[in-house]
Length: 169
Image (tube, rainbow, N blue to C red):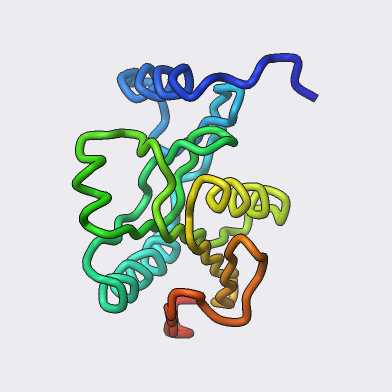
């Protein structure tokens, strides 16, 4: 249990920028709601290939506005979904904002062996509370799960299909 207070959004953003300017800060990290750095291992080449396939699929289906590893302010800190998508008009409104002060329409998490169900459930809920219309979680074997504010869905509410090649897993 944390004794520290949850940081206000502006304080989290300041901390993010301080860390990003520090040459000793690792490349892959997130901040929890207390401003504590959460370290993540460098993604594997296989993980990056899955991200690339998701970006291509989302761009083809929703329009070319997907991006990988974008920092996003949530009520659970500053998180970095593996892939996000939102319309160009929202990107234009947020140009130059790092981290994004709002959660994109679609957030995708590609699971790694080190992920826990609890951490993915926490991120999924934070993205949805922050305004994501859909969160997609891709399992270690290529399983694709869709979530919206009502919970897990059998199919995408946005009509997204992710038929990822089995060779990626």
